[in-house]
Image 1: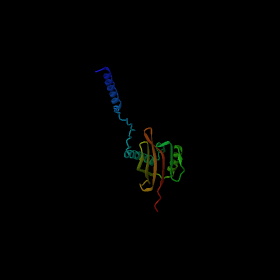
Image 2: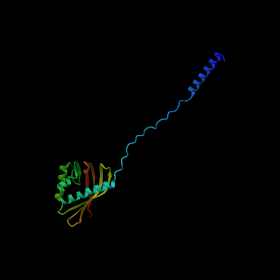
Image 3: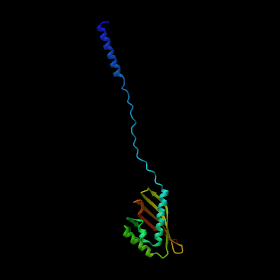
Image 4: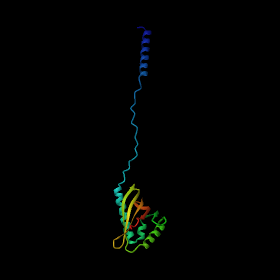
Length: 174
């Protein structure tokens, strides 16, 4: 074989090799699955446990209310609380709430007791709205009035304090 033919064959072989390499699709790289970032799912608050905790606060509140213990009642309120009682102006802050409580206690007959019943709570473990009913009784245990209330409790420093409340008495039966 002469050098000229040999050179053509080698050149054709190299060209064919380059052509076949150039025409093949590139090898596919395995792509890593994109990293999925999910927000942590917060556990739903245990509303039954929160309701029991709020009812416990209401039981202690009722004991302080029945005993006429104004300082104990004020301890349930946040310093910036607002109370909206029936037939009274809005009381903003503990000093105003204290005046409202003292006036209410001065006008009630001796031996009056009170019971608060938490009917429902909703919210989360930081802020809870409570709906409840109140029953007032005289010294003999006879019901003298009933009413309803809503309270908003906020967890501060690990304990619930009342930041807003509103309540009023039901109409007396004729």
